[in-house]
Amino acid sequence: MAEKLAPEKRHSFFHGGKKVFEWDQNLDEVNMYIDLPPDVPKKLFFCKIVSQHIEVGIRGNPPYLNHDLAAPVKTDSSFWTLEDGTMHVTLTKREKGHTWSSPILGQGTLDPYSADLEQKRLMLQRFQEENPGFDFSQAQFSGSCPDPKTFMGGIRFD
Image (cartoon, rainbow, N blue to C red; front, side):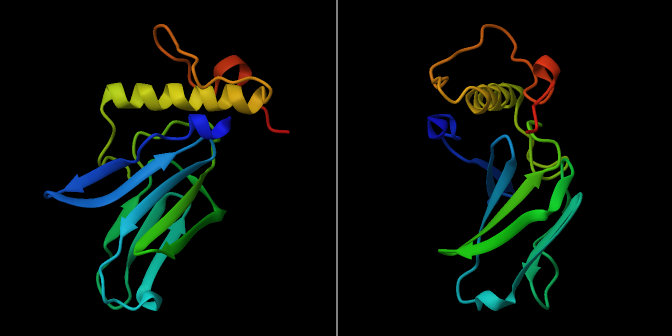
């Protein structure tokens, strides 16, 4: 049932008319997807993830991305992979349930409507995680949605 509450589509960040990356999130992680240039050996790509900063590029060149993150991450469980011409960066949220409006601080933030939809989806994921025998995929909120990180005393860590 959890897959019913997975993101329907990725968010895209464009700059200068070109797609920089796509991203999505769940309660625990933010995932970034960066299309790789063709004909560059895979061993030349790099990604450096620190608590509140990310750097992505090709060795010997200026970084493609060199930005602060929107929120802190757990560096010991964040990682990156190369798959089918895409760099997939998984950032583990330090604050589970925190709704990110963008992975990059001040860049490509979601509009208020999209941010509200994202918060509602994460709240339903939280309900699903805490009540695995129920299906929340068709649940709806009337009015504003509470913050999934802090609602009713916050997320339980077992």
